[in-house]
Length: 138
Image (cartoon, rainbow, N blue to C red; front, side):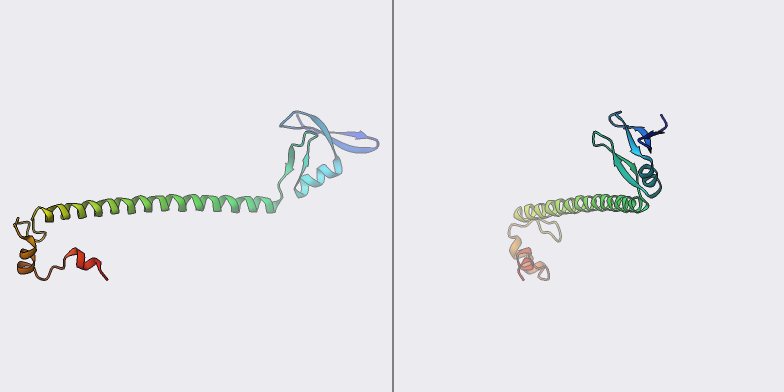
């Protein structure tokens, strides 16, 4: 229903109904029109806020919305990067364990041949390959 005006003790008031609780109430017309023109809020007797946003509030809300969207995109990108990093770690751990099992079994990591004494083989046949233990130390 459209708001209507009434006169109370010589003052014009806007008769309106709260859209939340349906309570009928009045707002002085001068205040109602000022809030409508410049932006601002009034409250129904039950305390519900109604009114019009100001231009600055619209701009602030838009800026907050853009910031929220940007942060959501950043969070999604970081989650994707984290998933990729975890996949790379899992792959590297799998390759490391596979190489370690093969070395323990006596398989040369360079030529895939099996030897009873891999350490002696690595020193004599592949002297340019540095063992993993020596690479890790600074």
